[in-house]
Image (cartoon, rainbow, N blue to C red; front, side):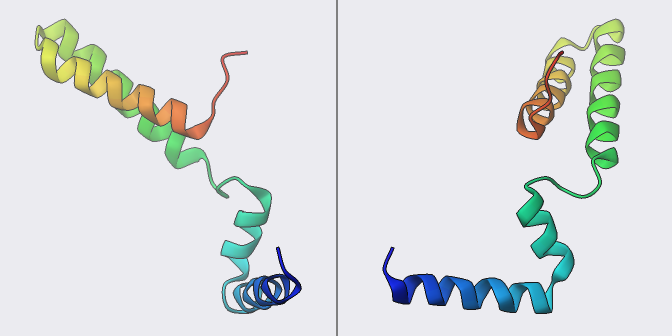
Length: 80
């Protein structure tokens, strides 16, 4: 990266920190500030998937469970 590009990037970072300090700190931390919403969404879609399986609606159940799995994967959860 050239020196001019570094200066431009530094200027953009400073402006972001001034205008949106919450967003800037979340980007620096690398994780969203409130994971409770993600946990709740996973729980809701997993429970809905199980309920639909019990009721015999296999297609929507697999879709709901699949969406819960995608949420888990995108959040970077580990099973340990």
